[in-house]
Image (tube, rainbow, N blue to C red; front, side, top):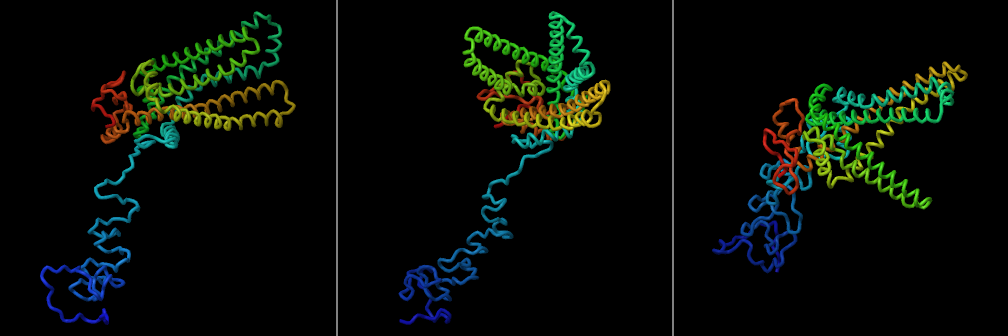
Length: 459
């Protein structure tokens, strides 16, 4: 039986029977379908009874031959090409902005200030700390210089005195008796201890006060030194107390460790080293663990308006589950600051060596003393400047760590977003007055003060 030419016009046929479906059984001459035809379709491509399957026929949805992949531009296959108004100008699957219908597009959290308003990453904390110092130099560097000034001045005076009267002081000490030397040693040690304690308390107060410009910089609010102190001075006594508690606890723990070591050495002799060494490592590990747990206590005292003990408890609870992360950030920042300070001090050492060995290699004693005094003063000034920058940077990191933990646990970022929407700067500290909820509780934590706008927590 000869097959009809597909390009020839269709023969004269009677109208189809009632109820007959277009896709009926295959004709004997097209059993199984011809290549390029749908399954069971007749071989006549131009037969209107069976439906024209040629491309471009709008009646049958621009169907493609059997087995061919669907072509873009076919509305039956939901054309995802750009510019198709029927399907919302969809992009191919996997392209940027391609989301199923009904899903909102992703919008990055706003970044009005030094960091975005969401939980922070390590790089964002580092960058935010540098930006805070750059945007608030008077407050940050001024407080850092005050914190380092007393120690730098004391070190410079001692170094200059030793350089100018080294020979005469050595001759004078040789004329003193043993009791007089002991008294001199105790006086020097007491002076160093007093300077260290005063520096510790000043640094603690300024470290808490420097949290204010960091918190305000998150909403792009600049802070001067006077405004910083006015906002933080009400928490100065609590900061002094927490510094005193930390110093007393450290001295007590050191005294206990020294007493235990003395007893072991006096009783066990040389064998005591096998006990003292691991005991010392355990003491150091406990000290580091407690120090990390209390890292954000000054920030909590200033921003949440807590007392010393409440600040310790708050720092202890908010750092739960984040100890290793905080420890890693503090370790990296400490190493970075130490390396930068040493690099800055290298030129001072080179200049002193240049004057001593090249400019005046056979200088008289008076000129050598003058050079020693100048080098001591220059070293003290450069050390104070480098220490101020390092102190400001470390304090900024500590404050941003606190804000990051509040965003993760208390939904502080949502409260800051609401404050940002108002667009008003009331001159206060962002985050102060935001409620704090303990996990699994329905009431606020100790030290909480209700804000004017109502509680704000993560749902």
